[in-house]
Length: 355
Image 1 (spheres, one colour):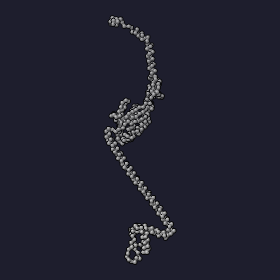
Image 2: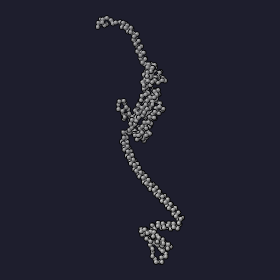
Image 3: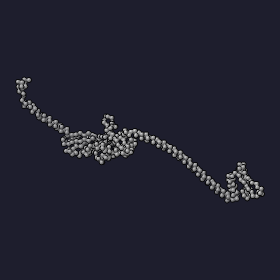
Image 4: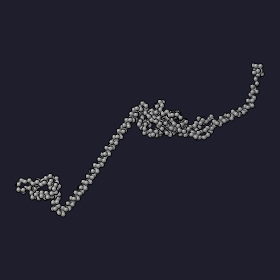
C-alpha cells in the first residue's frame, strides 16, 4: 500500500501511457464497429415471408405496387416498412362463447348472453352460439382501408345473424332449419363484407354451435314441447281414423258400384232378350196371326191368374139359378191343372159373354 499517493509511495502512472495501447488498437476497434454496423444494415435489408403470408412494403409511407410472396426479399433499411398478412390462414370469430386452444370451450357465459340472445320470427327469445371462419383475400384493403378490422366483422356478423333468425320460428331455429340459417347467414355476411363494407376478407364458413331457449323460459318451452307432441299424437290418431273410415267408405262405394253395374248389365241383357222374343213373336204372328194371337192371350191370362187368389165367374145365361161359380185358382196352380182350368174358364167366359 505504500506505493499509493498519501501513504508515502510513488506517484500514479501517466494517463497518456495508459492510452497508448488503445491508440495502437483504435483501428481494429473502428473496423469492428463498422463491420457490426454493416452486419446490422445487411440484416435489416432483407425480410422473410412465410408460405402462408403475403407482404406489402411501404416506402416513405406509400405502399409499393407489388405484393411479396413467400421467400427472402430485399428492402431499404430505415426507409421501408414491411407488413405481413397471413392470407392463407383460416381465422375464426366466436359469438356467444369463447374458446382457447387446449382448453374446454365456454359455450355459455353470463358475459356472452347478450351477444347470443336474439328474437325469432314468432317473437320468442333464443340463444344462438355460432362461429364465423374467414380468410384475408385482399391484404391492401385489410391493412389500409379498414379500422378495427375484427370488430367490424363482429358487428356485421351479429347484425346479419339477428336479421336471419328473425325470419324463422323458434321451433325451426332449434330443430330443422339450422343448416338453412347457416347458408343464408354465410351468403349475407359475405355480401356485406365484400360489397357493402369492403374489408378484404372472404367468408369460408358460418357454423351454429348450439341453440337454446333462455333459462327463464325453459319450463314454458318444455310444456310447449309436450303439448305439441300430444297434439301431433292426436292428429295422427285422427288421421288414422279418417283413413280407416275413408277406406271403408271407398270399399262400400266400390261394392255398390259393382252391384249397380251388375244390375245394369242384367237389365240390359233382359231388355235385349225381351226385344229378341218380341221380334220372334212378330215373325210368328205374321206367319199365323190367329194362332199366335190366341197363344199370346193364353200367356197373358196365365200371368194375370198367377197374381190372383180366386176368380168368380158370373154367367148371364145361367138360368137365373143364383148360383155363383167359383174357379179355385190356388188348387189349379197347386195341382198342375192350370191349363184345364184356364180352358174351362175361357169356355165359360165365351159362352157367358163376360167374366
